[in-house]
Length: 356
Image (tube, rainbow, N blue to C red; front, top):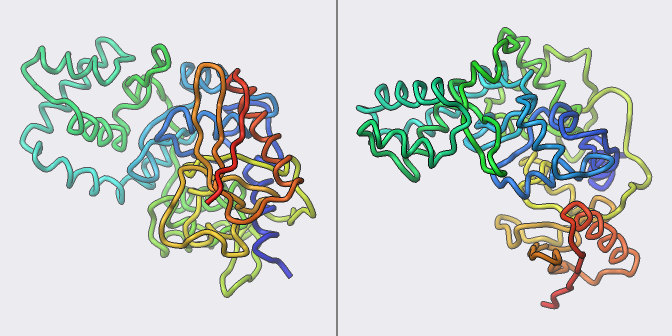
């Protein structure tokens, strides 16, 4: 019989946390999309899934255009492979755009003019930061800054008109989608729904249909249609009154290596689910309904502490807020995870246990 703990361990393998791959491009392609709202946090989310984490790996993939950082799936940034950006936007954007367009209503009368201006600016000179675009628009007599400009650009990303360009000193830039993805892969709707189901349940499984509906902002009807279209490429089992889908074969390992992980809440291991997210807390230690930390410490795929990360020039400090007494083996696993994170950042690791 499969338990919550079994599912959580299985996910560590599906998500490459216990089965790392060669590099950032492969991570993004394998997971289909990786939430990227916070660049520094999401960079580690990608790097920790590689065999030899390094800073310039993801940056090189974005600079080359093989990986994009753009709005897709939900009204937030994700890393997505260029081969998947076109069909994934076409499939998921229609249900996300109304959220953004509602916020853009005060600019409705200017939208056409602003869109034309942004497209013209990027056609003349790509790889512009948001500040660059604000200045260029102001020169044309169109003052748009702050939240309004961010929403304008998010809408253009969701419409596959703009996307990430070559980063400048680590800062996000914008370019025309057609320049970065000149020959986007296209799928008809049924093909796209089936592809989505296979890719999500392979990279995030075992998971439920409601997990996928949340992740891709789709209706359950569409998710079920995708599952039906991919029935010969998926397997399932029943647990806790729900059907969990996954790639054929595989299964829950008896143990995971590495055992410890320090992750932000934006990590796909947490944010990649909604319906069955808390299989990582089989003992029900964490409060439900509210998030009391910005990070988590996992040992053997189970949540043992909340975590807050602080980075200075010399060290990265992980302040742990344990949900219960931590055993020596668990602390050792967390120290190992801190060491991996610190090596990636090029600083010293420090772990502090904060008593409640």
